[in-house]
Amino acid sequence: MADTKYIFVTGGVSSSLGKGIIAASLAKLLQARGYKTTIQKLDPYINVDPGTLNPYEHGECFVTEDGAETDLDLGHYERFLNVNTSQKNNVTTGRIYQSVIEKERRGEFLGKTVQVVPHITNEIKERIQIFGKSGEFDIVITEIGGTVGDIESLPYIEAVRQLKWELGDENALVIHLTLVPFLAAAGELKTKPSQHSIKTLMESGIKADILVCRTEHDLGDEIRRKLALFCNVKQEAVIQSIDASTIYDVPNMMLEEGLDTVTLKKLGLPQDGEPDLQLWNGFLKRHKNPKHEVTIGLIGKYVELQDSYKSILEAFIHAGAANEVRVNVESIHSESITEETIQNKIKGLDGVLVAPGFGERGIEGKIEAVQYARENKLPFLGICLGMQMAVIEFARNVLQLDRANSTEMDADTPHPVISLMQEQKDITHMGGTMRLGAWECDIKEGSKAHAIYGTTRISERHRHRYEFNNEYAAQLEQAGMRTTGINPETGLVEIVELEDHPWFIGVQYHPEYKSTVATPHPLFIAFVKAAREYSLAKEK
Image 1 (cartoon, rainbow, N blue to C red):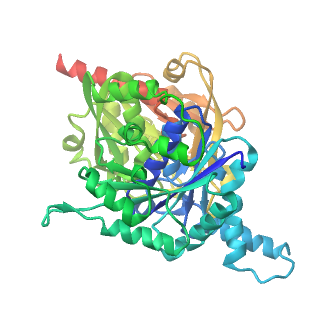
Image 2 (tube, rainbow, N blue to C red):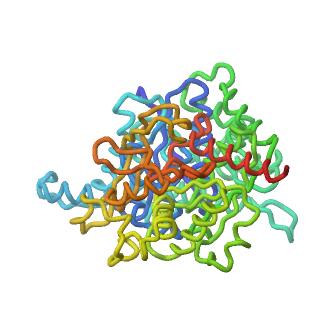
Image 3 (cartoon, rainbow, N blue to C red):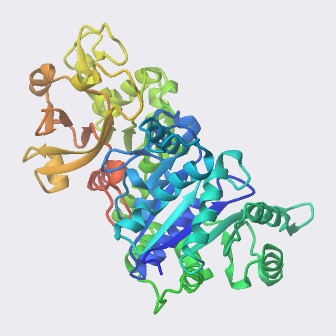
């Protein structure tokens, strides 16, 4: 018998049904029962990682402690489990093929013809079992991206079929997520799409053990019996996943449906007592019963797609609950902000966050937003590019440095207050070559950052090519912009603050990546608290 149990989560009928949330919710329930659990995502696109993908196409690129640029679902995994993911938790088809081709070039296949089966499928199986072989985890959940029947997903589905046969039914199971749509004209739920999805899965040689059904209406016993009969699963294994008001309700909904008990039963694992969700439910109670309300403007250039700033939005939920505050996030496209429109766009907000991003589009709007927040004493948080915009705005409008800019936006600027990092100057390949992952930062005592973190040494995750130009540090400091966080190895400025402002902080790193339900990020907690105090002061 294998020591590690494997759960595969596949999807059918439609994309965006929430495989990642179901996988994370099941993992949360298993973790709450004492099982060491991790989740990995297998993505069928040929990009080696999401780092070079447009946020409009893919949503945000999540960064792990060890510097992996990954799918945004890994953010959900970390937020739910409060356990760090790594390079091993996200695998793309591009990475699989790259590895196999490199092995072929090294002669590891001894001149054999390299094929999808067995070479690609063997590589996929190796990646799936990497956690099991390490002995770190009791249960490994693997989410297969895309939907069953997609051409690009076929090697993954075949690898799952082989692994399930090799491991045995008591050590591996398949959860299939489908849609049960409600047709308003007929006034009824339709099971046929799920039946066809299961049929497609079975044609690939895989029988689903558990069927999770996304639905807008309660399924009822009759529909459940029908799905069980025609989808070849037991009725207790037909799990309803009805629309929820928040993703953080889903673990409790899956507990009520018995997803964890059915899973443990099929894997032959003990299921004594109830999972310990005390901390989780304490968070939910505070989230759903706020005592105050604030509105924070998210100034970005990818705001049309909310997933572009997924970790930031979730960090506001965690910090809001910690403050017992409902955080209403108003997304404002930076291209829509001008000197003429700034008053209408930002007036009435309780705080402004200038978001990360790349390229020159929408930059002047971000700078206008920074200036408004600085001059009107509005709580301000700048993240990565947002911090760089704060430096540029201060250099232009306080130091009066004409055309001060970043060399990313203007290569010929006479005042490059933000410039390309030294180690980035000879790089030609764009993928996975930025400053990535966790780096340490020393915080100056007496600063706002020191009060917020309560320590002089922190570690935060990065994703950037450009940096604060230290040649301008003395000028900025003298004018009131303090550099309060410095990387001890490189001297890179990580944190800037304004002396004569109630709450104005810019950070080069991405604090949102480390915020979880169990440990909301202190910077977001402090920012939301400052916004609440600003809101209360306005009412007086």
